[in-house]
Image 1 (cartoon, rainbow over the protein chains, first blue to last red):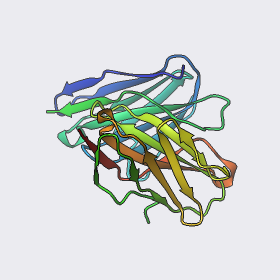
Image 2 (image 1 turned 60 degrees about the horizontal axis):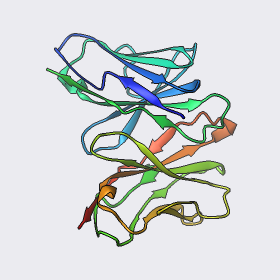
Image 3 (image 1 turned 180 degrees about the vertical axis):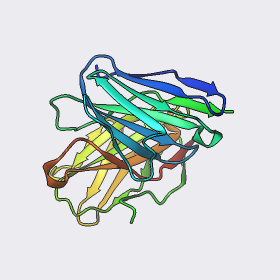
Length: 117
Length: 118
């Protein structure tokens, strides 16, 4: 159990367009979902924390108007990169914690590789 | 200041040998958790092992063990009997429980690339 999926696994888009990435917990309800960004051979940087039914909490330096996060249900969170530019090209990973647990473990999705041309 | 520090950008080990990946952390929170994740070239994050700050014993999971030295604020990962499939990036991470709020926010170290030679 505790499987998290992401869709799409990779996407190429043109500069100026918007891209939506979905993160789903397949076999559990996720109280909280997290969105990370990772550049090649670097660490994961937390972008935002989203709780179902409430506004996401963004980390310092992350533009909330550019990276729109919607946690519509206990099994789905979406990240929309608006007006994407080449510098937004990165590996985006989501994770989720189960409802009712003391946040012992985060379950990670397989990641989405975004390339903006 | 860095909350999680991994000082080894890259490590090499011979197959079947043991290897230690270093991790030091900084927190004033008495309640925290330390994690190690493996990230192969595919990008997925694989959970390896967890150590809670109040755990008396060092955590072990199969070939993985965590050398937890609380006074030194270190949480090194030991991989015994290395296998070729262990070649990957390894991340140390910490979850703090400031004020009793434990919603699981993790802070990651810079990572260590481990290469296992045959």
